[in-house]
Image (cartoon, rainbow, N blue to C red; front, side):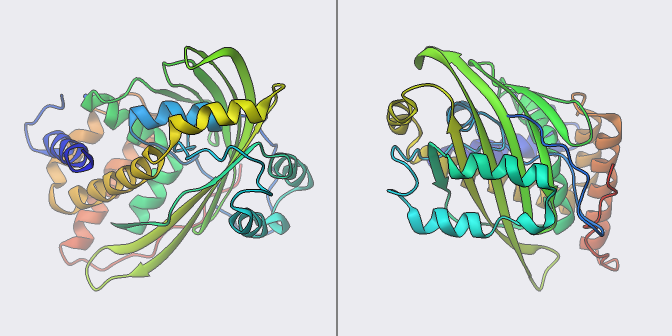
Length: 320
C-alpha cells in the first residue's frame, strides 16, 4: 500500500515536470520582535497526504502538524524521556518573553504529545529550507495533482490561514526559524463527523533538521517533528483517547511520504529544468514573489548539478 502511494506521487510529479505534461491532481500568533543578531524567520512548515492531514489538523489543530500518533495520556505518563528532551531543545533563550510564555503554556499543559520518527531525505539544502518555510508551494502542487482539498492562504510573511475541507480551520505563525530549528505555534478548531462537538486547541510544532553533505549535489538531511497539543474542552483526555485509533501509524507513514516528495522535487530541479519552470508557472495559488523564487531556485539547483560552482545555503532572512 505504501509503495503504491509513493509510486503514484512520483508519477504525478514526473508528469507535472515533464515538458508538455499536464498534471492530473492553529493559535494565537505570538508577536515577534526577534532575538539579537540575524535569525531566519519564514513561512511555516508543512504538508502530508490528504488523509493524514485531516487527522493531523484534528489533533494538532494546524498544518505543519503532520498528523501524529496520538498519546492518550498526559506526557508525564507516556514518552516522558522524549517529552523532556523536546522541551530542553526549544531555544527559549532566543525568544521574546511573550513567545516564551505562550510556548511554555502549551508544552506544560499539553493534552497530547507526539514525537514522529527521525526521517531522512536527500535534497538540496536551499530547496529543503524553501519548502519548509513555504508549505503553500507543496499544497499547490498537490492541488495540481488532484490529491488534496486543503486550502492555505498566506496572510503575511510569517502567518497563514488554513482549511482542510473536512471541518478543521485555523491560523498559524512561524515564530522562530533557523537552519536547524523551526517553531510554529497555532490555534484552531474542529467540527465534523469524527467528533460530536466542536473542539478548540493550540499547538506547538517543532521541526529539528540536521545536514550531512554527500559527495554528489545533494545533502542528506535528517529531520524530526515534535508536536505538543493543548485541548480546551472539558474531557480533553477523553477526546485524546478518541483520536488515538484514528491517527496511529499513518502519521509516521505520511511524514515519510512527504519527506520523500520533498526529495523528489529537489531531484526534479536537478534533472528537468524546463519542466520545473513550467510547473512554477502553474503555481497560481501562491504569491508571485514566492513563485518567482521557486523558479529561480530550481534553475540555480540545475546549474549546480550540472557542474557550476556551489553556493552556500542562504540561512538569513530579514526580520520584519
